[in-house]
Image (tube, rainbow, N blue to C red; front, side, top):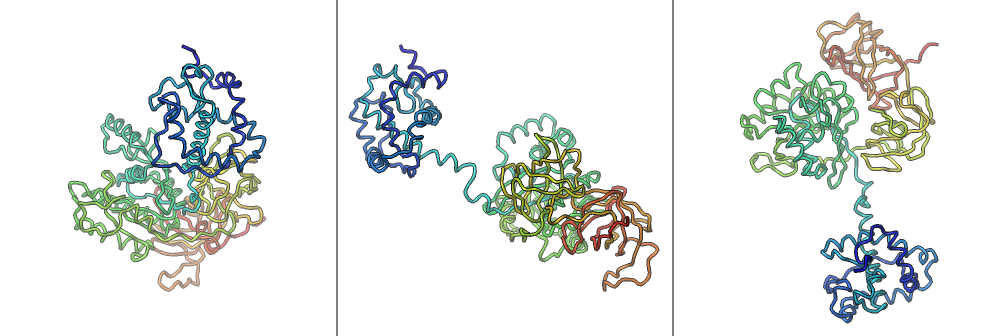
Length: 592
């Protein structure tokens, strides 16, 4: 048996042997139009059988007749083919058809002496192959199949409507163990972002650790520490798509020691999903003083989240069993508080029951829950109105995180303006001029980005050590304001004693965290009328509103609330509690 009958070790060897046989084909191939319209297959045609499996050469003409005719007419119209096609076709085909051949081998013909449709020189005589003409036809048919299948390959990764989907960032907030990561993992599974196999692997690993109900959250809690304790620490990131929108999930930590991370996550979000547990006792601990449900809702509002969806989770728990009374009870307790924080119950808040572990009412309506008539969670997200973004505004991209990876890479959400590849930007407050080498929007490379997208930018002209979270990327024409001293209106939310000038706290503004001191209290503001007091107050206490002058330890980037709300609101924290929320009224220039 000729060694050439078996599949070759590499295509290079095969090609050398083919050269003599191929000379006759050059003219036929040169005339083929590479840019021809895609071939529409005839569904009712006879099945294509390779030549060496056919009983007689006559069968070929029958099975190929419907293909041969259009090819013939094509050749006539396209006689003058560009030279490079003729030169490169032979090699191109060898490359292109390797996978086509693999497909055929799979169909159960282990000894395929032909490359695509063209017999290897050694196999020619033995297989009793028909005339050169029939081979030519067969080749053309193969080419046609190529034409038909290759565009399909290109279409799969990037559908033509990809850039049109609106980007929405959703942050999951709520008390520890309310089920935020589990819901996030379940959504990713339901939208096909995590494969079943991966989840089964997580389930096995979780079972080994006696944590079988945690496996879904492992899709978002990726590091070992988070998995061992079952607590999210970092803000997990993932994304999924619905018919109309592209969502980025920000899975915020619920534990009170990681609230600063949660603020960073909420500052990038457009809408927040507050997850509360309906299980007896769990809802109460999350909601009472010191629980994270209240604090998170308030921080989300301060971070500029306009729309809040409240998922009443764990409805499948035996203590709840989808009971309407329990659902209403949770709702009644929450609404007054959310109203106080500043959400409008009619417009901004939406309640829905669900179960993160079973996935009920996330994608499909739950059968057990007969009393809930609204849309399931994912469908509801899809039906939300679009967010208005400032595309023509100045470029502002607060930096959330940075790392080294073949250069300096920064992460952040574009708040306004648009960025394109190779654009020159300025990193404030240090005024470094940088160039954007490449951009990833949710792991997909893009050349241009619009507001609301979560971006990874690879920058040139700056070292990773020179960047801190809270720095801002902007254009040289319109620099973002920076400074150390500013006047702000503050609402004291929770503080046991009084606050006087000289009080120190930690300031969280957009993605920046900085130590701050209240240097002077300027006036008190009446909550109901908005009137300002004539005299300077000596102190402020809980539930009062005042205008104060604050001074940071270092220079930070900020804007006034009037000009740019996302970068003008802040929270003050001390001893692990949120003390005050506020907005920047004016920036005070530094005295030289």
